[in-house]
Amino acid sequence: MEKEVLLSVKEIKKWFPVDDKLIGKPTSFVKAVDGVSFDVYRGEVLGLVGESGCGKTTISRSILGLTKPTSGSIVFEGKELTAMKKRELRKMRSDLQIVFQDPYSSLSPRMRIGETIAEPMEIQKMGNRKERRKKVEELLEIVGLEKGFADRYPHEFSGGQRQRIGIARVLAADPKFMICDEPVSALDVSVRSQILNLLLELKRDFGLTMLFISHDLSVVEYICDRIIVMYLGKVMEIAKRDDLYRNPLHPYTQALLSAIPVPDPKARKERILLEGDTPSPLNPPEGCRFCTRCAKAQELCRTQAPELKEVEDGHFVACHLI
Ligand code: SF4
Image 1 (cartoon, helix red, strand yellow):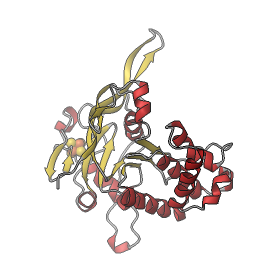
Image 2 (image 1 turned 90 degrees about the vertical axis):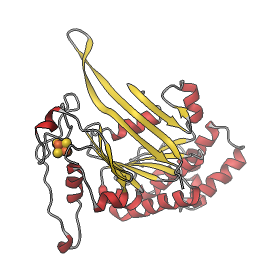
Image 3 (image 1 turned 60 degrees about the horizontal axis):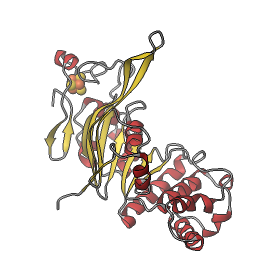
Image 4 (image 1 turned 180 degrees about the vertical axis):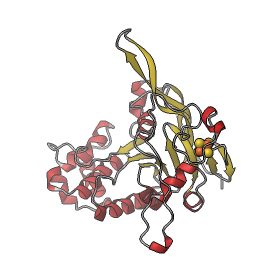
């Protein structure tokens, strides 16, 4: 069956100008995202992974309309988001929601949980007060909390419970697409799997589509259907989960996967250590972005950027050697 594209990102770039203090004009640019394309299919969880500073968060902010891309296109259900005025974007806001990383700072300490969850419904003018209260109680139960918690304040809850409250608030807007920005990285290991299972239940029960941003490849393996690996503002590899973990093709993906801890010592793979630091996005390498740290780099890699090519069904790689 043909998959339906819900969101399509084409060649987006986000360059932040850096002003020269002497002449008061930008003379260089931080190339946070530099020509990234991908589709998100309806009903899937698409992972976006890479080290910090690779452009993951800039992409999510561009999709949500919180930052305007320098160029490129973002189409959601056939509508071009980058061309929308603020008012039009506000109308779309309920369809596109985000679960934040930090459940401590994402909830207002002065608002009761019920008010926090009901707020998106009030903004969208959904139902009357009584109907909203009923929906709040239903949502609390959906995310595994008691409906009586609606009258309590955030400080009365643990990190995992607060993340559940954050998710209930997102669901209140009845979204079609959810961005989960490192939603479990601030939580204790013991509650991470509970939140991941909750997200998987929501995907199954409500057909939610998610873009799941993380630097943790074991978390991504657990929850995602397909995965995009990014490095320094560019896509290195896109593949279905099993293809990526069984047969990583890009040297950067191979290095990332070799660093995942494995409990069985016999199953342990040799770790590929990356030399040096990630170069600055202010002055990225000219050819392949990964060439300064790649053990397989050749002369061509330093002068020519490899294109992202489909090498197997749904498996895309940007490397001259593949
Ligand atoms: Fe390494 Fe060259 Fe492939 Fe880049 S193009 S990942 S530098 S081998």
